Amino acid sequence: MIDLPLMTYVATLSVTPGPNNLMLASSGVNFGLRRTLPHLAGISVGFGVQMLLLGGALAWVMNWLDALRPLLVAAGCGYLLWLAWRQTRAGQPGAGGQGRPLGFVGAALFQWVNPKGWMMVLNVALLFLPRGAGWDAAATLALLCALVNLPCIALWAVAGDRLRHRLREPRLLALFNGTMAGMLAATALWILVDELAAVA
Image 1 (cartoon, one colour):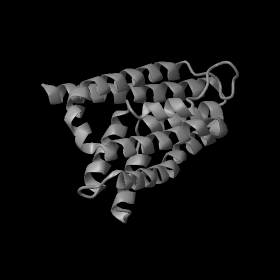
Image 2: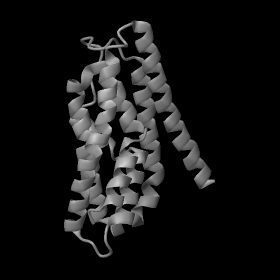
Image 3: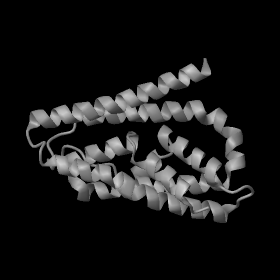
Image 4: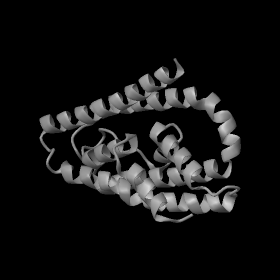
């Protein structure tokens, strides 16, 4: 089960732009790498737990997933739009009282409404869990996924932290935050349009 195709697949999906990575880059800029670490860890642990639970109960999940899909998409997109609105209001890097980074629990729970996260977990479970696999195989897969995911998403938090020092000017920071908010909002709207097209 632990093979190069699996690791490459998880690494590629983890490192490409998506809600988690956009939020990590924004948090790195606005709060620095140290304060972003709980957010970073929460994503990887949340992803691993999601992989474990979904992989271990794949047959059961597949029966009710279609019924829950509209609710998950709506919740995930609504949360992304709220985060985009919040991002536009972010203040100067390191400014006290202006906000706080997403914490470990919030980041871990976000994986359950993150459309890209669901797509990743479902694909990994379907493609890489052996036929007839049990909880032990799901646990191994979940641990591997979390370990591969962590350094990939850390790149975004580090990049945000490095940009932080260049964005001290309020105008540049506002431009960055507006751009990131626009990308999050566009991601949410794209997902909603795609979901509506699939239903129609």
